[in-house]
Amino acid sequence: MKLAKLIFALSVITASSLSGSVMAHEHRAARHDGAHHERHLPMKRMLAGLDLTDNQREQIKQLMQQQREAFKREGRDNAAHLQLQALLIAEQFDESAARQLLEQQQQRAVEKRLTMLKLQHQVLQVLTEEQRQQLAEKHQHWQQKKLQRQSS
Image 1 (cartoon, rainbow, N blue to C red):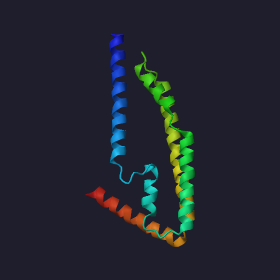
Image 2: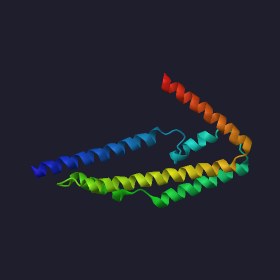
Image 3: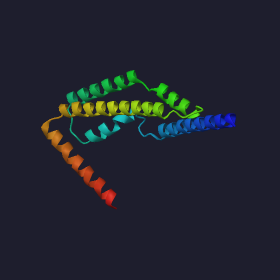
Image 4: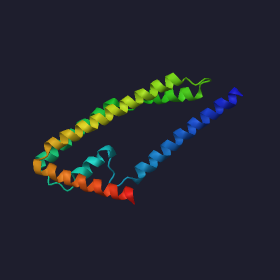
């Protein structure tokens, strides 16, 4: 009986790992323009249509490059993922250990989101007052469209 549970748990883990890999591959294959850093795509969309000077473009490019390098240094936390998998196949489920791992993952997600907000703030500081106003108008337009989609 224990062996059957172990085999089942391992097959579920393997299937979930493979499906994630396939989905990631399909996502990469479906990308337009071959962009390597999709996490900055919203930033590009945000700035599209603004008449940036060459100096502003260069400053923004440097800020984004610094951010990419910082994310590369941090890397992915495969250890936490492996620990969660180990909890799944364990004889007894350790809820407190699972909670602790999930809280750590959540804290890392919060830190990453905070870092992205700081980057957006730095980019906004590069813009002129007029460009910030144009951006605010775009944002208001996006919000109106979002509300229309939600109400329909």
